[in-house]
Length: 121
Image (cartoon, rainbow, N blue to C red):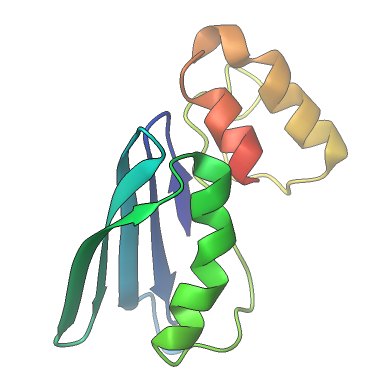
């Protein structure tokens, strides 16, 4: 599950079977000056640091390598929380081209968040 915002990317990995237990969570936060702070938690492991590249796209690109480093090779599905869907989206939706375009069109309702959401998608 992704939650991209104007200055952060939070993500989690959940088991589909037998339930919705979170097995991993991570975040890239406080994008600034070409750097971001990050934190990853998996079981007893908790890693925090600052890394180069400070935008949402760079953070999204790093997620697969982070998951591999913690022993997660495959992902079955990805969900993304979008801040504002206006009256058009009140429930989960499949992210196809038309849906992404509609989210872009709703940017005036969440001008700091919807563009970051679309970039992460």
